[in-house]
Figure 1 (spheres, rainbow, N blue to C red):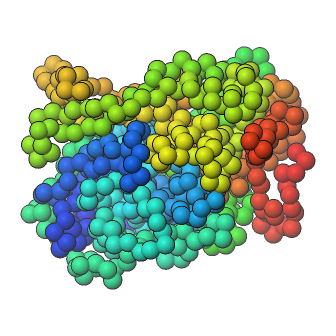
Figure 2: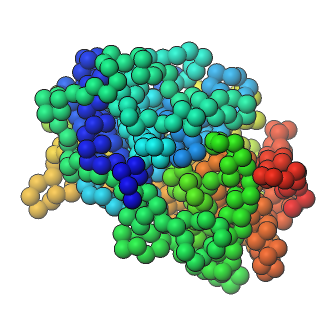
Figure 3: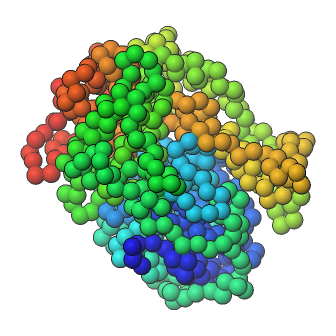
Length: 633
């Protein structure tokens, strides 16, 4: 451990003071959050006069989902900081502006008839209700930690580095909007981004690792529309923190004390090098606060023929082998190996094994599990019953009353509803299969399920037809995307309500008292949704994901689980899942492997457009001219 491997308490104060100086110079008070690389909240600073809440949403006039919901600005700042930290690594530095570019209906945004962003749907990961991410209410503990609003696409969140080592992130909420940038053909002067830029002085991402030095599909990522020359104060200037505001407690995230971060890769961070399970793979595993491994290989729970613990280990091991041979898409320097997280689940969504390669971005850990669970659910004969039995979802707008500056209550107003069971009937009609999602007859990957989750079908081609898991385009936004958000919406909304209630305010629904303020003997009136409550069942315990990187696992014709991969380009994720499972099947010779070809989702051609199963890079391996490595398997 050395000074370049973590954020010290003094570093946190410096980052915040630099942001506060810029905010003060612009006469725009801000809320500033700093996290370490695994999402521990090291400090949240509220400047005097800063916005109490921010409005979630776009300017498209969409009603429902998170659109129009006002949330506490400190939660927005934390989500931005987590995003900057989680999307970045030693090989790539991405910001919340990068996230904005890759979650919209076209990539690039505004390029009509282009496919959706490569990480379409990633905003609904790292969720507060997940069973995978961790919680430390006020202290420092092993990660990866949850984010109050998932990942953010609102400019104003950056990674923090020391000597090329990622050590955390900073997020700023100063203006009234928690949104995204739908137009990338111009250069904005976003207030949040300017203040966050000031915060990074001395901790900025290496220039050659920034998103604007990295391409995907021949397009350069965005990192920031501003730099240090656009600041109102000299870079490195610091504000008087004692005079400008104060560090604040954020219930469920920080107790108000400024803390040092963890050293990534040590047990204290929740990630440590593997010693025995995956020899020669340079793998890392997750550990708890006692240093005990989380998700060491176990056997499946789905009866005779279930995946054994050794089979789960071999599937992960072969996935690691493929990743270590393959050329990364979104990293520098060129010809760096793929860096990803890998999760194996059984058909019930129980985690059987997890590992990651060295320097895989943190966000991919939770996302790899989301992808695996999604493939297992959609490929099963239980998906229809899981979805049709879910309660209807009510969408809320919320307001502090009688005013934000002097509130005595938080009032929720219902602005719409959604019946999750309707997605099943729409999918059956769309595919022309009356028992789809209820008979296990089709093997779905996240690429196939993602095709069905886009607001345009085929993906990106502008037409009145949306995928059956998506809202129609006129009712769609990245904050209201369809089944993905609907499954977790209630838990996300009640997490926000729990937080506001913990601030001492009663919660009202349509003007009627829903829950009183905490009082002696009743400190928690509105409960924080527990870990694993995202989707209501084990199969959906951390939500679903809708961009590529998973395949279901079969033993012969029987579904027994799935593998999910995340952290690199989506074609690389697909290949590690598909080819890693194929190689594991050959190595094991126990009947375990990919789905029989005749039941794969790419046998379906709805609306005269074939679903995709996987898409592997043409010539993926470092130092090899081998091509079409997934073909015929």
